[in-house]
Length: 72
Image 1 (cartoon, one colour):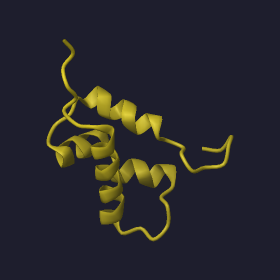
Image 2 (image 1 turned 45 degrees about the vertical axis):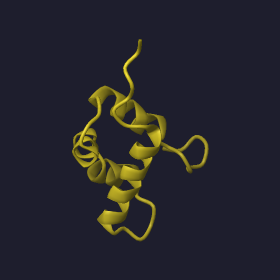
Image 3 (image 1 turned 90 degrees about the vertical axis):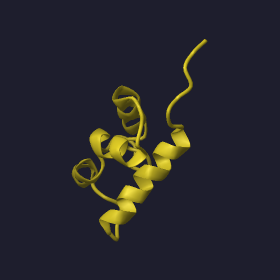
Image 4 (image 1 turned 30 degrees about the horizontal axis):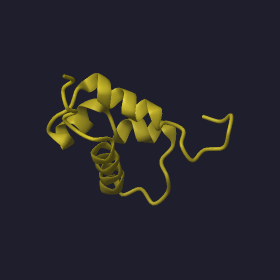
């Protein structure tokens, strides 16, 4: 039987949005700024649990959302 995830995708999303809000930027962050605000280590500390590899995959899966196609 597979293990249940320590945190859900929705919890990860909520934590990331909270971290961005706490940073106080008025505009969406650039990729570089996002990486300074949100890291796997900081996200895991905020959530209190979670496999670092799973958290990294969740962050990378959502990287680039909302950007024009073909830009980074």
